[in-house]
Image (cartoon, rainbow, N blue to C red; front, side):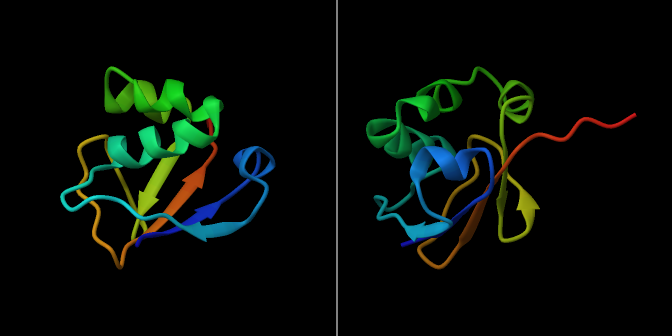
Length: 89
């Protein structure tokens, strides 16, 4: 079961800093976002992102400290972080 760490503003949506989420074997980041969307409608848009670039404009997801794309495979012992996108200049 991956451990999910949630940062503001998403923490306000899920109501906690971290939790475990059971996913089927072979799950991807999109699978995780769909599972979150079942409980928290705000995540549905992220799950249906048409590309990684679109997703990254809305939410940044790190898996084991590396940025993840929608097709990134998740393992039961992974650490997943949900972070806001950061614009720079």
